[in-house]
Each structure stands twice: as C-alpha cells, then as structure tokens.
Length: 361
Image (cartoon, rainbow, N blue to C red; front, side, top):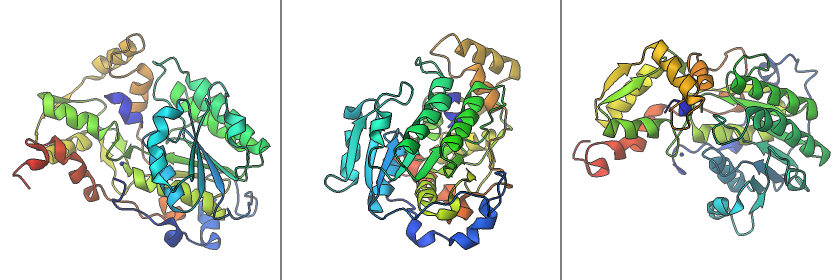
C-alpha cells in the first residue's frame, strides 16, 4: 500500500515534444537555476540525430513502456535493457519492425550493461526500487548501479543521457532510499557532466501501483487507511514524464541540469484518498492511522515481507513530495502538465459499483 506512495492510456493526452520544445536560448537561463551552474558553464552537446540509437535501462516497467513508445514514435531506434527479456516482448509492437530491440542486462551486477551501449548515441536509466524486500539493495541498484551504467555509457561515447531520479534525492539523507538516489545522481553527473537528472513527484496512470491499489482497496475494504495524511504530493501523469524524458534528450539547454517534475495540482495524501473515494463512488471512511502505529508497521515491514511498508518508506511518507520551484520543471522542457480530471475519472471507472457498465455517469 504505502510502498506505492514513494513512486498509463497510450493515446490519452499525448504530448508532442517536437511541437512543444522551446528554443535553447529561452531555456538556458531558467533551466540553469538550482544546479550550481550558470548558463555559460553548463556542458554543451550536439543535437541528437533523428534516427539515433537510444539505450533504455529498465524500459519494461510502468514508466518505461511509455518512454519506449514515445521514442519509437519520434523515429529513434530503441534498445531496451531488462533482466528478463522474455517479459519485455510486449514492447515490440510499440515500434515498427526491428525498431525496438530487447537485450538482457542487470544494472546491479553490471551484466550486459557495457555491451548495451555499443553504437548508442543516448542513454536513459529508469531502474529504481522502492524497498529491499526482494533481495536487491538501494546502494547496489540506485547508487553504484546508476553510477556504473553512466560510466559504461560514457566509455561507449554516449553524448546524451537522462537519469530518472526522484524528488527528495539527497546524498546526505539519513533515509537509505533518498540517500542512494542522491548518490546515484552524483555518480551519473561525475561520469557524464552533460547528463540530465529528472526528479518526478508521484507518477500516476492506468497501470500505476498507487491509485489502482487504493481504488481496489476501496472496492473491498470498509475503510481507507490514512498514513501521514497531511504530506503533500504533486501527482504527474505518466505520459508527461515520458514526454519530459524525450524533451531532455532533444533539448540542448537541458544538458547538465536537474529538473523536478510535478503535475498542475498539489494534494495532501488525505485529499488524494478522498478523490479516489469520489471517482470510485465507494465513499469509504478515511481512517487516520496514529503515528506510533504507523511507525510500528514500518518496523515490522523491515522484518516481514507481507507488511505494507518499511520504516524507510514511512520516513519518506512524512516528507512532502512537491517540486522545488527554485529548480526548472516541466515548463522549462516545453511540457504542459495534464490535469488529473483529464484521465483519473476514466482510469478509476472500473472500480465503481457495476464497473464500466454502471448506470451512474
């Protein structure tokens, strides 16, 4: 449940990066804010060729499938690196014949990563984990793994690189998740100074594990648990994050910068649950979980795999997950954020009494 907090409709509200990209001149000053560089000292890079090969590490997940699709639609050749290629074959029809290649690789062990960048002009790393319950470790995946992937890309001559991070990433954080994200950012920028870092808020869409999880809970349970209900989020549509990723590769003014990405609305966790109640027509009671009980749940989650969250995730839940206005964001990449009303009602319709065949409009 809570694990999804620290985290699509293929044709809904599609963004056309080609039409929306601002010029480098209009973005150079604003996009330099907050990253310790001026427009004059930021790295430069050549334009990305229209048929360039783009290597996407972790491209079969919730966000990855949309990025792969938008890359293919823009004409790029796409090489998707996943641990189990047979599980990513569904990506093939998103491009034309032979346009999308699926290869094996593991960012934690380094297997296949160097080879995956052979001949590529651009790279995108999307790999991240929400907990360590499956045996993976934050330090191995999000810090060392991200760093080593960027080093492999640099060694292969990759000129354009995007690292998908998260709001709250901080190498000095006491929270392992946030610290590993921050260390990964630092390692990527050391290996490729022109790399672009994207930090989205809560990414939502038809296949997400946030709205869907609580909507399914609302259909079955008499209450919806509210943990750290005042914490604020800035939910962003998955298609907008995919469009921002494509723009970061194509926009020369994005090189070397950090962007924090959020949707047009800032909502508390409590307000998000209320929205789910409204859209599912379930009207479940919102049950406030005391801080002490939530903390205990987190500690038990460190030991028991079936618990809904870990202590690390509970610590993250107590912090706002909102884009920093001092850093460049979606608008600097030429993306107009999609309002929740444009896709959430249709997305949650199936959870209503009677589902999509409900008489209720």
